[in-house]
Length: 348
Image (cartoon, rainbow, N blue to C red):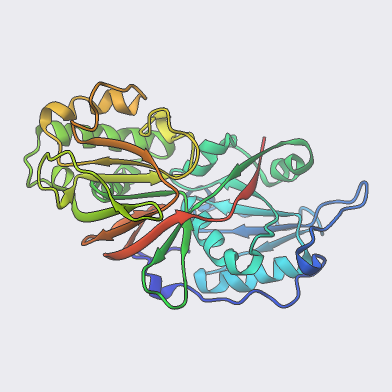
């Protein structure tokens, strides 16, 4: 369902359907006692865990499965689910599939999303790690969990290009720039070598730390990207430690997730909301602190050493390089980064 570079110009602009099945005026459908839930499944056959696998389409007449061939077909599939008044939306795919479904579904479901379940079928599945979804979770497990499992609420990151009259935006959960973009490309190499999920994150992180220890400032891991960050509604420019070129940041990493793959803790004690960790062009000596920071340890004078951990309701990013959202590259430009709608996820 993905293309090599995901451009905002390619986003489908969809209107919210005039009729929403059994949910008139945004009211949530009430099931009768013993009634089977109405389930809509977005199945991505290109996801890593689905390759060569045939999805069981005959599980129940109450389960409706869509296999959109690309992003342009997602709005129609989701609009059909909304008309049916589904109780559960199951996303069978990885983090990129989740990003596409949430992005296309925003104009359709608005603030009245059904419960969502995610089957971990991608290469990293960071969202399902955070939700505590078992790696072998099946469609039937997800349906059973609707009534008997747990619920977790999360708000995705909403990325909106500044000055876009259409107010188009993309919803995802992990965003990064600078060395993070370099790391994402290295992660693709790790996938080709057979490392997936937390192993791929661990391998890529370890390789990045080695680059920070031994590479020169001309290396893409240490050079980073030229960017400006303005925080909050007041758009106050983010402070800089003075290490390296103040117009550049070595790394930007942002997420609304609370548990990261490979048990890394880049945000320290910060858990809820939109969180950022930003590295200036830190020295090699400061780079030796990175393993401790990733374990959630807090060495003294982190900000003076060029390592910033903060929360903010929103920020403006102006960047001269690509950045990454859930595994795909977006073009340079100026963007508003905020939190999207609160969504309710079903888990075991």
